[in-house]
Image (cartoon, rainbow, N blue to C red; front, side, top):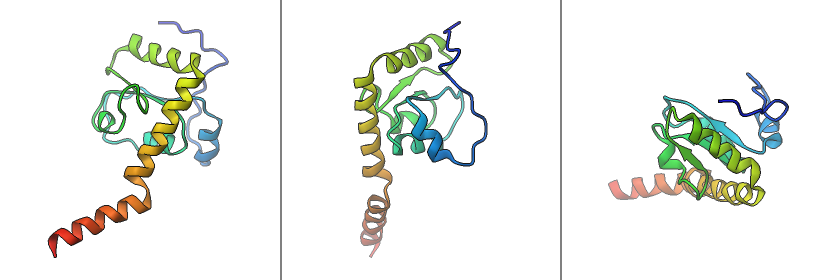
Length: 126
């Protein structure tokens, strides 16, 4: 499948300053066929970068398709390409998904929410 992305996509390799990379992104894409809960998706979401990712392991528990990101079937190149096209073409969708993605991180993974979860566990066993 040819998408003619020359000049529009970059495979950056290892980077020490990940924050500046996320700040430069319009879209984050993860095409893994095997994962757990990838930190890089959490990082992208926390930086308000819209995500298109494959439906592997913990990703569907984190991303609700069309609400806070796009989730596509694993090994389905056409769906993955469609998800990328959709995000590239629609700035309003990118902004909406990015805002909801950031909110998921704040609600579920921020220090405050994690400490509240720990406190609830401790209170349940005392």
